[in-house]
Length: 409
Image (cartoon, rainbow, N blue to C red; front, top):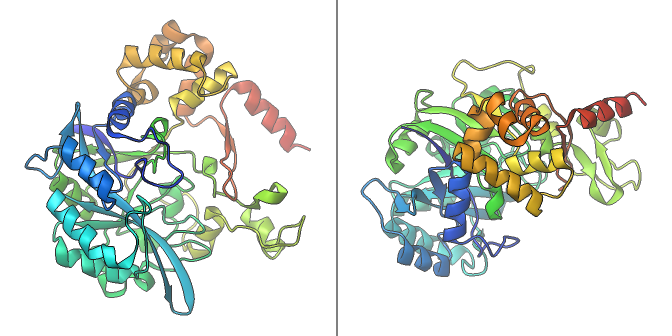
């Protein structure tokens, strides 16, 4: 069965997350997007876990049906620790197939951090040691390093990460079989590092609000089953993981180097020429994802590994409508057009990936129909994000032409 899954989100108990991130809202947003499986998030937080227990009933395949879709138990943790003379801050995602497993994992991690203070808890625990601990209490758990290139909190982060997976997980590296690429990189960027070839690259929204669910996702063709999903990722099975849905990576808020306080956005080669110093204020810039990939890559661009999983770039439907109509994404005007399209095509993915131009044109008009097809065909330009600032996608033809003119001066 073909379906979409978003395997990393957050609940209202995570810091800087919308209070709207509760089960009914998550479920509604997930169905509008076209998701079949969505992560619960934050299962180590006692209040959220107890709420999940009161609302979800487990079936036999490690998933939890709810209001027409399925939840998978997931939590993102922040591992903060010193290793090899450097302070590390690594985000990892943990999956388990039952509430019993979630209870045992939570109890085992409790001594390393205040699980109640944040749905994404901070643990004074080496990533390698955490894998050891979790595998001892839950044989069916699996761990995925989160958004592996972001500068401050990731496996390969410029400020607190490592240069290889083996440095981080040591003798437990074989327990890691999937990596999350994050919004600021896509699979093609990761293919430049041959040492990642054996890992399955997955993409998830890391959503902090309902509308952001599914902005990145994974398309499976397998049984709706925790253990089959785990096996698919473990074996990097291209017949069962068909493709991932990706941001245009330039839109991610750490794609380029830069300094937000000075409004400085610079490409890696320019940053190197400035010795990674802000040309305006003389302070260190934030090294972005593209720069870090350049540092660790051993392949040229556009080389595709033999076992690579395909991917598609998309822009969320509300964002496309907003661009075409020149109004905010949260306006009633955007919501009206969004509902019109969802009611016609069933969900956002069907609209963005499968709808024919003629159908779109007859429903919402030429400009919006052309914009959706333009995104589908990758005919957009993006002003890259940097130092916590999201990039800006140019979709409408006038915007693209204006951007091209500006680049001449």
